[in-house]
Image (cartoon, rainbow, N blue to C red; front, top):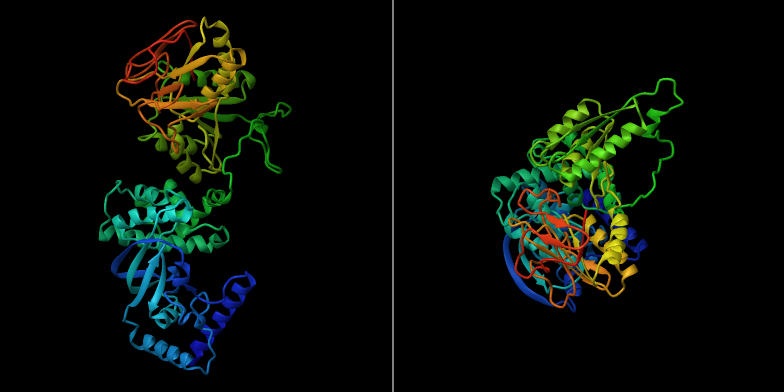
Length: 539
């Protein structure tokens, strides 16, 4: 149909002009040119595959690439033989459909057509979502580029799911998706799994782009990870397009924060947004009848067994003392982060709480889910490195205290060997150890130090080694093992039990500490010495 060719030609000309304006090639990409200088370590025949139309980006050879714009629309004149063949193929597609699969190569999860360029052009013109093709995969040699690393993560994911249409712009996306869709590591997908996910992903992608996702520089896969971290996968696959759009709009600020190079902003002083009413304005002492601020604190443990909870209670008492009669504070203890935290948070939000403090980092996922549904309630979680606008995070400046403790330990120690007890494997502990050593070295520059945690018998011991004054730890994203790395001069073993403290340890751990000696509850092979001449406790 010649009229369709004219419309496709106009679309191709627009794409050509746009590419030229960006300083890019106005024609299709050519795989043979891309592969020059690339070491291909394997060729894998994938057989007949449903190729995502948006992932078909070029041709295998340079023979026909000048006949198409970068979007695969034709750009040759209307009176050419190419135009007549394209129009005839268009008529055949409308009458009985295009049945013959194309032949293509896959490289870095992008597809390049070897045979069937006009078929791809016609199907893309009619907005086909998938195009059948016989595919050969070209696997490049591993290197340190981000694109290469993400691709090798995709290869592992593809072996389990056979899904090739989900893309991520950051590392770890495929493994996280495997977890969020309730599949165990290494568990293969069934046909029903693929159908359910394809339906959700198609619906989600449409709503993502409808809300302006194309301007964010993110993929629908990036946004889907945020969405599924808040809304359960089992609920998401049952949602209607309207529900997905509504839920996604609530999370749009969470999505946009992914575009920032530095997602976490540290604030050491209170700040108020322009035009926003501060929450504490409800406590205005100049108001004749100030309204009451409803505050709820949720603890994973209780004050009888946890020094951490007792410290939080002191903060609660200070708040009541500062605003007598104007703050109503309630507290809930023994809230299991993985079992009932989400339901408890829902309950307090429905009770019209103004602000909710969750004092366990493990409650952060539950906070995020509930905060999206209750924008009028403000949620704060006692944790670090959590870039979520819906949930603010806070943490005590323990490093300031431990700096002074390091100075005190250096002053009171009878030798140059000083120890530090690291309580829990959370982000604040390495900072506290760094501060402790800085304080120690400020008064005793030649001092040697070692650090050990409450080495609980039922928990693995992790090492923190240092070089100079910089610590390396086994926190997420860093390297750690049960043995001290070779060549280190100091180490720290950290208990992974969140509730362990010098005063209470459910697993029989804990540390007895004084100004002169310290004895650990147990010793694992290769750990730090059993006692240090001077030891102070870590928070």
